[in-house]
Structures are given as structure tokens and as C-alpha cells.
Length: 398
Ligand code: NZQ
Ligand code: ZN
View 1 (tube, rainbow, N blue to C red):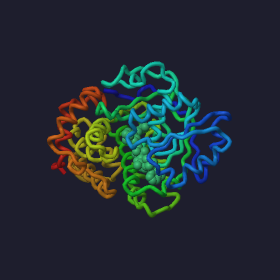
View 2: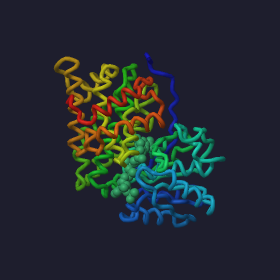
View 3: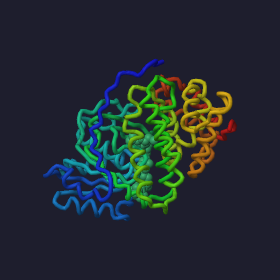
View 4: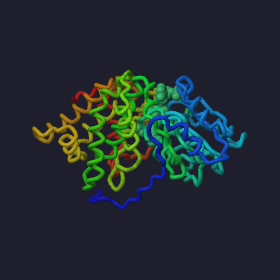
């Protein structure tokens, strides 16, 4: 177990271009002479005019389009984009969308430059897990604050045929720049706003709720970002509330939540994500909903090893100072659950359509595509994961 802040390197080269009407600056952000492939999702960027604004900004560039990247982007769809790039000779990518489009574009950028079968970019029971050496350069225009994919080097890809959802990370897939216009969030429906608040919240929790190593910067940053989400979350999910600063604070919080600032030198958990991904593979539950359905049970089942940080979380984030340690922890879990409920997010497996007969399947996917010990210092065994899933069916402990 780590006793103090570990050695670290912090490197994040993503240029953030934040604010109102920044899309016209694409022309100066993308190097002259590049042949650009614009990538996007199921059509929201067409419906709401963002794609037209992007095309207007790129009018002096040669460009093409690749649409249809799904929520939870699939390997199969991304490979079609790689074939288009090879056939038509693009040398720059521009992702316009949420985390799925950006993650898909990261994989496309890596696969287009990969010698060999792109499945080998992934390990975890899929391919050889070879490190990539290079990727096509790309930028992003973010339309959904949630994942921080716009400012990190991770991509999460789903595999239709292999029932898997697996990530890879490499500095070659940091975006060169990301445009963050808070006003692009005005077209998001409540469900996606709630997903965004919750995903960002849980990214912070994954990097914070482990055990203390004296990382004051990491802890206080994490606690303040959690408090911002608790403060603004209920207003953010009001899809008709187009207060600019509200959405600007939401967008920037979600970006900072997983740009790696919070995780440097301190232990990370990520078991909620590992368990959540299996639910999405099982029945296509939205990413964030798969996480809120699992987290309360995980906090409860692993309360011994997370004891000190749970108390710190209770006291500093929720202001719970009365009662015994166990009462404080119970109250912190309840407050977290109430917070998700207030956003209309599920907090149990039943609410995301999972019942007891699915648990074997979830655990076996986990075994195939993750290591058998996950969480901080690998403390979470498959048996513990099963217990968390079982507890999350009903959350009777609440
Ligand atoms: O596909 P379109 O038509 O564009 O619609 C999308 C999609 O249906 C819609 N949407 C996006 N921007 C919109 C909008 N609708 C109206 N107005 C807008 N401005 O929202 C839907 C969901 O989009 P998606 O990109 O799937 O959501 P999100 O950003 O939550 O991304 C989820 C994916 O990111 C991965 C998840 O696993 C999941 O696959 N993650 C990536 C991470 C990373 N790269 O570091 C970390 C995360 O933990 C997460 O795992
Ligand atoms: Zn997430």
C-alpha cells in the first residue's frame, strides 16, 4: 500500500479553446494544407447546425465526412473510417461530438497509422495489447461535457461480436486541440445532461475515494470539483435553463475531472467503471447510468478499505460531522444516492434492467476482459465484484 505521494510525470499537451463562438478559429488551429476527415455521431451535429458551422470554418481546406459513430463507439464502425482514410488519403481528423465520437476518432487515428491488425491495439482478451507508436493528428469540437475525452489520451471501444468494452491509452492520441463552446450544450436533453454530471462526478470519485496518501492538492481539487457538481447539478439537468455561466462551469468541471490532474501521485480505483462497462455490454445501458447503478453498492461493500477516505468525503464534501464513523459513512452513501436520484439517475441494477440471472454473465465478462483483481492495489477480486453486483440489485443496506 502506497504511503506517500508517488513520483509522477504530468504531461497534457491539449490546447483548450473555450468560450463563445470559437468554431471559426478551426481554420487557424488546423495546419494549412491538411486534408481533413470530419467525424461525427448519429446526426445531432447536423440537426443543430454545428456541422454547418464547422464546414464554414473549413471552407479553405479539402475535407470529407464520416458520420454514424455510435454512442459506445464500435470497433466495426471505426474500421470503416480507417478504410475511408486509406482510400481517400486524409491526414488530419476532426471529431465533432461527445465522448463516443472523440473516443472513436482516437482509435481511428491510431488504427490508420498502425502496422498490423488494429485489434492488437487492445489487450484484455481481444488482441496482443501492443503499444501504438503513432497516430494521425486530430482536434475536437466537444458537444457533450462528460468524459473528458477532449483532454485526455484514453479511448473506450465496444466490440459487437466479442461482447466487450475495452480501453487503450497512449500519448499519441491526445487531441491537438479541443474547442469547448458551452452554448453547444443547450441542445442536450435532460438525460444526457444528467449523464454528463454523473460521469464527471464518478471520474472524480474513482481518483479520490481510495485511501489517503497526503495528496493535498489532489484531494482538495477533487473535493471542490465534487462540490461544484453537487451545487450546479440540479440546475444543469434543467434542459431549458440556458444560463451561460452554469453551462460553462459544468463544461470546464467535466473536462478537468479526467484530464489526469487529479490522479497524479495518488492511488486510483476505476472498479466502478470496470463493473459498469459490463452492464453496457450486456444491455446497452448508457455509460453514466451503468456507473450510478453500481457506485452506492461499491461504497458499501468496500467500506473497510475505503474507510478513511469515506470519512474525509463525508466530512469535507457533504459536511457530515455528527455521529460515529459508520454513521458518517452511511450518511455519505445516502447523500450520494440522493444526489443521483435528484438527477433522475438510477442507483440500483434493477433500475437499469439487470436482474439476478444476469450476474454470472457480468462476472464472466469481467473475468475475460479485465484483470481478475481491479480497484486500488488490485484489492477487488472477482468474488468482491460479484458481491457488489448482488448488493446493487436492490441496495437493501440503504
Ligand atoms: O450521436 P449523436 O446524434 O451526436 O447524439 C449524441 C448521443 O446520442 C447525443 N449528443 C451529443 N452531443 C449533443 C447530443 N445531443 C444533443 N445536443 C448535443 N450537443 O448524446 C448522445 C450520447 O453521446 P455520447 O458521445 O455517447 O456520450 P458521452 O459523451 O457520455 O460518451 C460516452 C462514451 O465515452 C466513454 C464511455 O464509455 C462511452 O463509450 N468514456 C470515455 C472516457 C475517456 N475517453 O476518457 C472515460 C469515460 O469514463 C467513458 O468511459
Ligand atoms: Zn466514465
